Length: 138
Image (cartoon, rainbow, N blue to C red; front, side):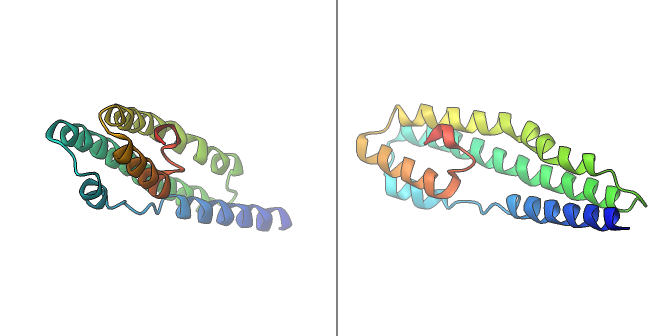
């Protein structure tokens, strides 16, 4: 009984950690766009970088929904397999990582078109809003 209670506690703790990780607020890219005062060519690359970032955030949200479903299915079993719970995080990172790499790459392309003031503002915005998700773009 103690083992089951410990497993249940571990599963709930893992679920809470995942739930918090997947409640990512979407940054106000419009505010960044206004602050940067982009030229037309910069604006085109900015739009591409924003779309890539939104795709990456959406992939985390989708993965979070899958985690929730898998966790519920596992906890419904009389004897949940805790190894499944530990693999959930790895699965999510595996699914979302390519999208975040693509987003970071698009931001790097934008950076090459920006002047120093714009570059500082863009990096500050990304660090403050997406720093843990796009470390390669900061």
